Image 1 (cartoon, rainbow, N blue to C red):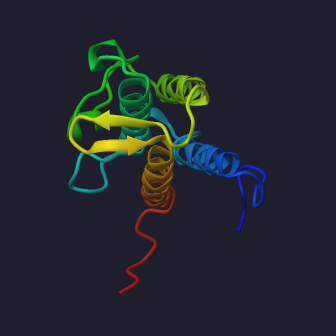
Image 2: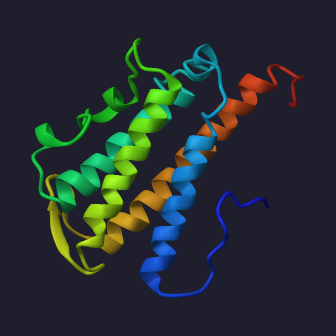
Length: 168
């Protein structure tokens, strides 16, 4: 197994959570980085999921969970917006891979700053989920970003190695 960030396997709980979230953030970016603009937008599944769309989606998740829920900003004031559901996968024609990577990295940096001001046990209210702690937000996004990084890996493999034979 190749690690994109140095593995942190011991230490305080918060350090472990933050490091694992950062690792998964990096993996979502790595699934898109280096793809052409056309390849990044290729739809290889029936949903709106594309490599660049996955990155756009996780940027929205960063803003919803950290800026809106934890930081208390109205959704209309969150950087870059908080498009609900499938709309979070939509990338504008004028947005490039570099733009969307930068957008996600800005959202992640802001999330780190916001989270630094709170204890893991702080309780905030998500409008649909109810009471959540920062610990829960970290765990949720670790799981969510890991899943989306896996989706991105599969899409990238399909792009880089199209139809190399039926494995059935």
